Structures are given as C-alpha cells and as structure tokens.
Amino acid sequence: MTEQTQQTEQAQQTRQLPPDVIAQLKALDPAVSPELAQATWALLTPFHEKAGYTAPKIDRDLRYGDDPRHRLDVHTAGNGQAGAPVFVFVHGGGFVRGDKHVPGTPQYDLVGAWAVRHGWVGVTMTYRLAPEHTWPSGAQDVAAAVRWLRAHIAGYGGDPDKIVVAGNSAGAMHVASFAAGQGAAGPADPVGPGGIAGAALLSGIYEIGAPRPGEPEHAYYGPNPGPEVSPLPGLLRTTVPLLFSVAERDPGLFQEAAARLVGKWLDRHGTVPDLVWVEGHNHMSTIGSLTVDEAALGVPLARFVERVTGWPR
Amino acid sequence: MTEQTQQTEQAQQTRQLPPDVIAQLKALDPAVSPELAQATWALLTPFHEKAGYTAPKIDRDLRYGDDPRHRLDVHTAGNGQAGAPVFVFVHGGGFVRGDKHVPGTPQYDLVGAWAVRHGWVGVTMTYRLAPEHTWPSGAQDVAAAVRWLRAHIAGYGGDPDKIVVAGNSAGAMHVASFAAGQGAAGPADPVGPGGIAGAALLSGIYEIGAPRPGEPEHAYYGPNPGPEVSPLPGLLRTTVPLLFSVAERDPGLFQEAAARLVGKWLDRHGTVPDLVWVEGHNHMSTIGSLTVDEAALGVPLARFVERVTGWPR
Image (cartoon, rainbow over all chains, first blue to last red; front, side):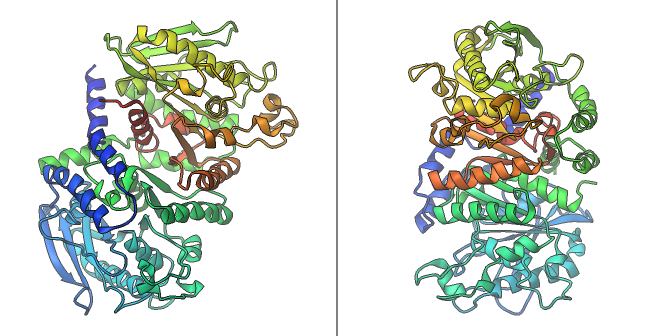
C-alpha cells in the first residue's frame, strides 16, 4: 500500500487544477479577446501564487539587441549549476502587444520558474512589435536572442547546445518562422535553426492567407502577403525537432491549423507530428497550465525538452 | 531548493524509462511482428518486474458469457473501497490471437495494476477470435463484458456508471466498434455505447478497406467488407468521450489512420480530437509504457479517465 499511496499522490500532484476550475475555463467564450485573457488569468493566478512563480534568481532586462524591446530575463536556481538545458519562451499578443514580464503577475515569470523546477535555465524574451516592425522581424529577433544566448548563457549555467525555444500564439509563429529559416542572417548563420535543439509551437497558425484589417496578422504580415511568409513548408523541411500543441478550447482557426499540419506532415513524413492536445485549456491558459496543471502540457513538453537535449544524461 | 528538488524528483518519477531504453525501442523495426513483440517486452519487462505488475487482489477468469474466451480478470486494491472508476483493457493480437493474461509476464496484469495504482478498479478481458468468430463479434463481446460489469462490478468496489473501456490494436478496433454502436443488441440496449463513460482507442484503424489474405483484418472482416464495418462514422457521431493514441513508431497504416481521423474529426466537429502522440514508443510498447513510463501515455490517459468519470470528486 505504501507504493500505491505514493503513486496515487504522485498522480494527484501532476494534475493540480481542481475539476471546477477546468470546468470554469471550459465555460469561457474561446474567442481570443482581452476578456478571455482577464478571465483566464483570474482563474489561474491564485494557483501560481500558491505554487510560487519566481525562480530563486532572475536577471532581468539583459539586452540582446539595439531595440528597446530586445530584452530577455534569465531565470536560474542560483546554485552554480552548469550545462543545463535552456528553455526560452516567446510570448504572444497578436503581433502588436505583450511582454515577457507583467510586474506583479505570473506572466511570464511562471515559465522561467517552471524551467528552473525541472533543473534547467529559463529565459523569457520580448521582441519588436507590429505595425512598426513587420515580417520577418519576429524571426529575426528570435535569431538575435538565440545568438546572444549561445554566446552568454554558459555564464548562467546553461548549455548553448541545449537551447529549446517555445512560443505561443504570435510567439509560436515567430518561433515557427525562425525554425523554418526565415530569421537567419544567411545560409551559413550558425544561429539559424541549427542553433537550437528543438522548438515548441503552442497554438500557432502556420499558413498565412490574406489578412483583413483588424485581424491580428494584418499589421505584421500586411494585407496580401506572399507564400514566402508561411512557415509550414520550412517546418516540414527542417531537421529541428518540433513539438506542436493545440488547446481543447482554441478557436477554430487554430484547430484548423493543427489539423492541416497533421495532414501535411503525414504527406511529407508518413507520420503524425508530435502534437499535444491540451485538455481543458484555452488559447490563453495553455501556457498558464505549466506547474499548476502539469498533466495538460507540462509533462509532454518537459519530456520533449529532455529528449531533444539528452537531459538528464 | 527543497521544493525544487522535490519537483525535479517528481518529474523523474513520471518518466522512468532510461533514454537508452527509449533509444533501443526506437531502433526496432516498427512493423508489427512477433519479433517486435518479443524485443519490446524483453526491454520493458525488467522495469515492470521492478515496479510490480500485480495488483494486491486479482479475481481471475470471471465468466461474462458462454464462450470459453468470455473471461475477465478484476484487479483491485482489496481494501473495501467503493464507487471507483473501472478501467477495462481489451488486448490486441491481429483479431486471431492474444489473451488478457500471459502467466509469468506483465501482459496484461500491468494494466490492472496501473488502474489500481490510480485508485480505480482494473479489468482485463479476453474475447472470441477470428476466423471462427467474425465482425462484429468483438464489439458484441465488449458489450457483453460491459453488461456483466454493470451488473457485478459494484461488488468489487467499482461504479457501474464510471466504466472506461480501452483497447489497443485489434482491441482498439473492437472498442471502436462498440463505441460506434456496432455491438449493441438493439437501439434500447442499456449496455450500448451509452453504458460507458469513455473509450480509449490506442493504435487502431477506423476505416476498413478490402483486406487481402494474410492481412490481420482479412480473417475478421472478410475479403471485401462493406462500409458498415468501419467504425469511423459512428465514432464521429457518438457522444461517448473518446481518447485516441498513435505511437511515434507505429507503422504507416496506423499513422495514416490517425491523420485521417484528425481531418474527419475537424470536418465533423470543427476541432482536433483528443489524440495522444506516444513519444518513443511502438505498436507493442504503448500499453507497456503504463507505470514504467507514465509521461508517454499514462498521464494523459489517467487525466482522461478522471475527466470522464469525475474522479476524484
């Protein structure tokens, strides 16, 4: 019974959000809106406050480029470790808003704390925004951040050859562009996609149509972008290991993007891609499930990071 | 650091297969064959022996029908609990072989032990085989077992309204047929699909073509089955909650089946189905990952069972 009790407790620990909270999340209108964000974080924040969302040490606003938005935070255990995987998070915000750090909230220090809990280094980064900066500025900023991390992260205990970059929503699309080679300075750029160990694309869209004014893609890709902006062909070609996720309560566009990805991936590779269906969560709560609802995304995402970085050895 | 250490250990506990074992699994020829089964279980069995694969109490060979193959084993903690979810496993074997219990091995007592570790009742069942018994005998046998469980499982601590039926390979196809309504005695049959709380379909095929002699489907469905044998339309219609899985190393037919499922599900529901991509595993090792590699399948599968049964309250 001791082993059984222990394992039952372990099972509980990996899915900590009470069913009524999941039910409240699922009852929200899934359309991406400020109201959804507010309601989602109102539900999740108490659990992050209880779990703790700040790593023991956070070095904030390190500059990885010249723009005021070229800043990243490094989250560590502060214990002098070395050679750890580096988990980088690129926030969403419809290409026109968002930040790595909203003071007084778990957004997105929680991601850094989650990485540190797994024994890794966490990085949260901010990037240039539309409409001032358009495609492929996001991919270029991810590339610049990776370039900076490859040069400097060993000083924080990270292994520059174990960088995994994750993004959600618009952030997923910037990471996808980077993984597809759209942010590289050139074919020989060592911080092109070959500079990372893996990429995790959470609730992204990988084929860009003709956005209308008011659609989030309009400001970043313009009204009538060519096929070269769509990362999907590059994602099908890249050798960078990829994890995708779609939330149970993601809106239709993201569901369609995930399903199309599966079909195209089968056509190309003869297999289904590593796609995580994030049970009970919505477009905003997927990233917020880390730590407080590990079974939703954290467990497969951590497994992916450990697989592609060979950690722990 | 205490919390961090604890959580790192927790992370380790949920993915216990060493990377070299996963690498050896991934190096196996994925074609479904006796060699794959032998090599897979040779790799997994030591871990199950270490973890323990027998529940505290196993009531074997309870008869749920007249045929010698109408037998099931009930796995419990033997602690007098009541009202627990009931997790039923239907084995594979190409429609012509297989058993719920191979003495001296973890097949498939491990599934019962896994259910009991989660606080549920586990059931492993055997069913009639082709070529003597053809479609829809498998679905009828699942229905008969569910009928028996609804009548008797309370006596073992299970809740007859919390039955989740899982199958893999041919077993998945029998469970799919049942969930699609192919095994019901009639429209008013209370142990039709409405008699279960959910179904988990692991590495199945849901559209049946024209099997050739030698293909596993030939003996069960015949050489030229009609569209009525394919469970996919019924799966798209059913209100029974469904979880699907496909293994990273499943052969092409199963990859195609999963991808087609995703496309058809989107067409019907506008969403992606709950599909688990079982990282690192093959057609045989998916079910063997339970307990010893929980992050692969066990975590999302347990979350599914808890969601559809409302457990724990």
